Length: 337
Image 1 (cartoon, rainbow, N blue to C red):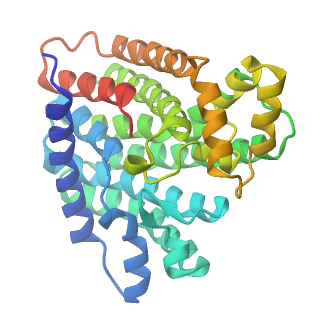
Image 2: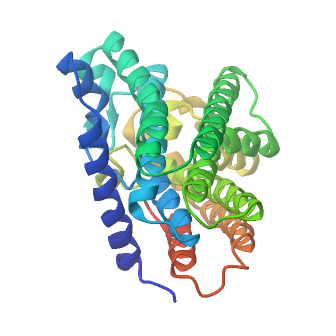
Image 3: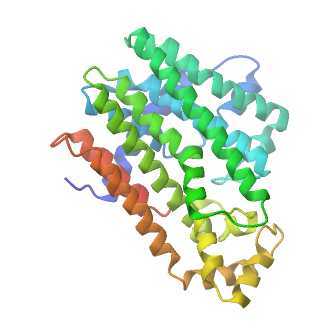
């Protein structure tokens, strides 16, 4: 059954509220400001797409929300850890209309708050996963997979930093490899941990869900890159063409450099990475890029990855959780935020 966008968003929001509640109930301590800074982004809202994938992967194999909450929340904590540290590296002031943690609390406390989130993620799996009734050998596998995904994220971030420092743009293949690590790893492990938390999975199921999560994660980042150029600032909380101003070497910008005429290419290179570039200059180059129809091509590539992801679910016919996973994946590719 194909759900409307509103129905998909409603289902995602219902899971998000449960995740938020679970995290806030289980993360507290002294000093107070450390935990306030750690929960700064959690309390500001968010789609919680990664935990949603974990919960629905769990339900696909006979699991319950109670069983999936520790794993789903752990992935969200790791995700927030990466956001806090990314914002420090990028020297960003705003994230989705909220002051970044290091701007609000200072860099030293922001680093510590990220470290707390990272540590609490593993604490949540080992302690609360056991409390939920997951056996110890499964918990050990979950810790192994989550730690491996964290290594992937760090390697992907390092690749991203190298890309930013290089004078030339990298190839499309290199870029896909980078986002496969930096972004898709957490989508992959969300599906893996959700599956492992369930009572009725077999090894092939784990392999299927791993493949599904990885491909959806690539789709997600491709669309995110598109929004970084075309996104409505009233919705995203960032300026139109923000990634151009920030000098982020994304696939849409790589394609634009290849396809713009020499005059417009020079214009793009002039404002690329120039944080004090005039809004009019940014708007002009965004309009030039829009005429290349790169947005349609990026969404086509993202949709190709989504269709490949669906192939991993083909054997789970008639299951409601499968429909939820597919509908949420379609929402990811079609979204404007």
